[in-house]
Length: 125
Image: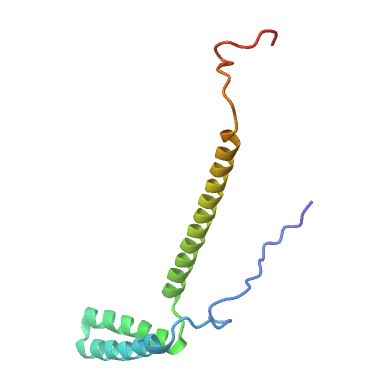
């Protein structure tokens, strides 16, 4: 009988392990600049729309400071999955072409006797 272990170990959390950077160069600088602009506009505007601008600006600023964007990571993962699927489809198409060529080569030497075994089966079988 197996032991029941109600406690499962959590390997990493967002606060324990630094995420890899996937925002670089001009994209990172643009996030920093856009975040500062949105924060300042939100603070000047005030109200609900100002809070929304502050939130968006804070997210852009955090993206620029950390160099990591979870949304971009998900998009890159989906793109990678699509490229893997495309490669598998192309390999399957190549294999199908090879199988067709083999079947055509095998049947090119076959001779037809005119005996349809479904309509007139051989005697004694």
